Amino acid sequence: MSESTEGSNSRLEQAKDKVIGTIAETMDLYGVTPATANLYAMMYFKDQMTLDEMRTELEMSKPSMSTSVRRLQEIKMVKRTFTRGSRKHTYIAEKNFFRSFMGFYCQMWEREVKMNMEAIEESQKDFIDIIKDAASTPEVAAEAQQYYDQLEESKTYYHWLDDLVASIRSGKIFEFLPKDQPD
Amino acid sequence: MSESTEGSNSRLEQAKDKVIGTIAETMDLYGVTPATANLYAMMYFKDQMTLDEMRTELEMSKPSMSTSVRRLQEIKMVKRTFTRGSRKHTYIAEKNFFRSFMGFYCQMWEREVKMNMEAIEESQKDFIDIIKDAASTPEVAAEAQQYYDQLEESKTYYHWLDDLVASIRSGKIFEFLPKDQPD
DNA sequence: TAAAACGTTAAATAAATTCTTAACAAAATT
DNA sequence: AATTTTGTTAAGAATTTATTTAACGTTTTA
Image (cartoon, protein in one colour):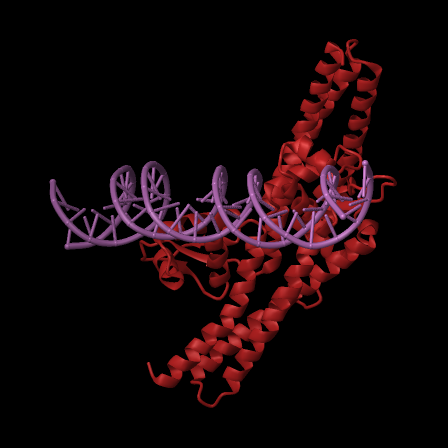
């Protein structure tokens, strides 16, 4: 490789690294581990890759790449590709942020709704038991009723969040909030 | 306190703890530290509190409560209240999840848009320099152009995210996705 | 004016997480 | 059939993060 080409290549890398850094930082802030975040951000600028190519690129261990790529598959930010002739698995990053990032948020919200609604239902059952219990003092019963009502009201949020997820998943939200560039 | 009252009180606490646990877990998953997450979740069921009341309730140190409550103020999940006569500061949790949680997400997205758009602009400038540079080989220039285009396309997402935040902040989104409708 | 109360900052400790090395299992090539 | 290749699991090391204890500066009260 000639000197000028080498120089331009490192300039290319440096330019990419600026974006790679911020993408990874964002994922980091959402609780994705550094290795996983860096992997996705790096793959954002690559075509399909093998685990060995990833570890070479990031200078990290293979198990780290293996677990990271698995996590990225879980959150649908990377998908496996079929490559004829190669024994090595190949993976490609989802480049469309509407699918990668919004998909990630939707997954988090779905989990949030599911877990919290379950806890709320259980909790409300307990409060009703306390209210009905003849052994409960009027003060305790009133407190239980108050908490019950508070939880009941909070359900509005979770129902709405569920609707938001559905609207994003179906693409219906783009009728209300259009994407500014044609894609 | 009578025996039956004590028993009902711990039953009240247990019922609340189920919801407290899941709220805290959700915040945890979004990168909020455990002490801070637990504090908000606990305060969700309380009226205004002092730092000493918080540390008694959570059995944690005062500095931990101090830094946690500050963080919660930053993300607008807790606000300070004026309490006449008391030297101690008092704080109250934002009970409306549309304001607390959605406010938190909006803040995260605003940061995401700002940071990534800045990086993209800088990066694109670099790619243009490479393209214009006579020392760049045609291959390198073509690659730079490709990355430039990829980043340009990604802006659509950030613009949309900005619109989403604005729509949530203004409440306009509720015209499209109304709140109420239970079940 | 001295002492106590309150909140915060700094340093140190404790805990949890993340990554690596090593060992393993499955599949394929020789 | 033996060896190599590939990906994953398990255990350990290293780093990072979170929390506590200690010290500090202000403000208030006695």
